[in-house]
Image 1 (cartoon, one colour):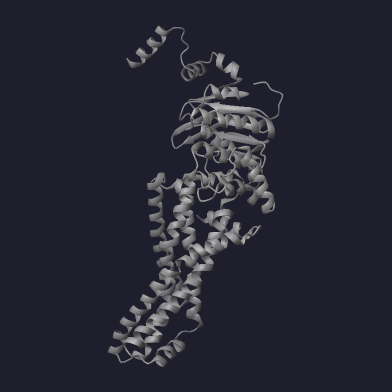
Image 2 (cartoon, each protein chain N blue to C red):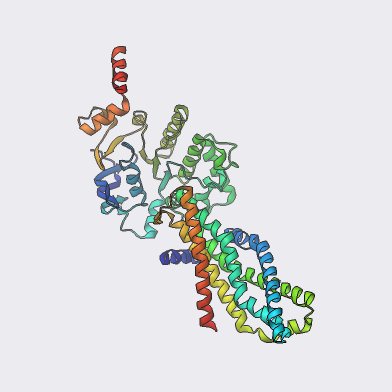
Amino acid sequence: MEDGRKPIIQLIDVVKFFKQQKVLDKVSLTVREGTTMVIVGGSGQGKSVLLKHMLGLLKPDEGKVLVFGMDMAGISKKELKEVRQEYGVLFQNVALFDSMTVFDNVALPLRERTRLSEAEIRTQVEEKLAMMDLEGNDEKFPAQLSGGMKKRVGLARALILNPRIVFFDEPTTGLDVTRSNEIYRLFYKTQAQLKYTAVIVSHDVPKIFKLADYVALVAGGKIQECLTPEDFQLSENPAIKSFVKETMGPIYSSEEEEMGFYEADQR
Amino acid sequence: MGIFLFHCFLGIIKPPYKIGPVIRQINFIGARSLFVILFTGAFTGMVLALQGYYALRKVGSEGFLGSAVGLSLIRELGPVLTALMVVGRAGSAICAEIGIMRNSEQIDALECMAIDPHKYLMAPKFLAGIISLPLLTFVFDVIGIFGGYLVGVGLFGVNEGAYFQGMYSSVDWRDIHMGIVKSLVFGLLIIWIAAAKGYFLHYERSGGFGAEGVSRTTTNAVVLSSVTILVWNYLITAILL
C-alpha cells in the first residue's frame, strides 16, 4: 500500500489469543492520516477484536499497536487518555448511556473534558444534533429512539469534540437500506467537513467500497490484503476472490443461469 | 479489586471536583434508604427492649434496660443492620447498574471518550457511601432507642429516668467511636464490592453475559457484601474492644 500520507495507526505482527484460540495471527495494517480504511470479513474473523486493539481496549499478546507513533501496550494511563482524546467511536450497539437524554449523551464529552459553560455546550450540542437531523429529539431517552436515530445520536456524540480519528464498528448493521444510506450520507458529509481519519468495520459490501480509500480483508485471523476498492475487487488472492464473489453475488448473464444458481442452492 | 479501589480513590482526590453527582448518589444511597432504616431501627429497638425486659426481670435488673438497648444498638446492631439494609437496597442496584453498563459497552464508551470511569462513575458512589452510612446508622440508633423506650417505658412501665440514666452512664465515647468506625468501614466495603463486581462482570468465572449474568453477579455481590460485613464487624470489635 504505497501512499504519501503519514501513518497514524500501525499494527505490527499483532497476535491475540482468547484462551487457546488464536483470534489474530501476526496481523499488520497501516491506517494513514485523512484516509478511510474499511475492514471487511466474515463474522467471527476478528474484525471487532482488531478495532478494540486500536482503541486500546485490548492489548496484543505479541506485536505492537502504534497510534501517533506511541505503543498502546506500553504507554501510561495518562498517555492513553491523551491518545483517546483524539478518538471518536461509534460502537456496533451504539453504547448510548440509557439513563441519560439524547442531549446529555452528546453533551457528556464536553462536560467532562472541557471547561465550556452550559450555554456554550448547548450551542455545540444543538449544532451537532441539527447536523444529524435530530432537532427536537434532545429530551428523548435512547429507549425512545429508532435504530437509525440511535446511530445518528452515537455519531453526534463521537464527533462532538472534532476528533482526528473516528472508528465505526458496523455502523449500518440492523438498519434498512434507507437508514443505511442516511448514515453513509452523514459520514460523507461530516468527514468532508471535519477531515477526520476513519476506520470502518463493516459487512455492507459493496456499498461501503464507495466510501473507502482502502479495503482490508480479515480472514482466518490474518489481514489477507489491504488494497484500494478497485484493486480489491480485481484481486487474485483466493480469499479475497471468494469474499468478493460471496458478498457481491454471482454475476449472471441470463435468466437460466440465475435459475441454475438457485436450484443448485436448493440441492 | 485492590487496584480498582486505588483508582477509585485517585478519582476522588484528582480535580476537577463535582458536587452534583455526589449529592445525587447521597440521595440514592442515603435519603432513599431512610424509610427502610426508620422501620427496621424502630422494630429492632422494640424487640431488644422486649427480650431485654424479660431477661433482666429474672435477675431483678429492669433498670438496666436502657443501658442494654443503647449499647447493643450503638456498638453492634445499628451499624450492622444499617449496612445490611443498604446492601439490599443500594448495593444490589449499584452492582446491577454498573454490570449493565459493562455488558452494553457503556464503560468501554466512557474509556474511549477519555473519561475515566473510576472518577466519573465510581468516585461519587464511594463518597456517598462513606458519608451516608454513618448518618443512616445514627438515625437507626436514635429510632431504635426510641422504639426501646416505647416498649420498655410505655408497655412494661420501666422508669423513664432509669431507662435514660442507665444509657447515659453505660454508653461512653468509645462505644460511639466503635459505631462510627464500623459504619465508615461498612460504607466503603458495600460500595467497593458492589461496584467492583459490576465493573469486572466480564471476568466472572461463571460468565457475566446477558441479563442472567447480571442477576447472578448481583446476587453474588449481595451475599459477599453481607458476609464481609459480618466478618469485619467481628474484626473491628475485637480490635477496638
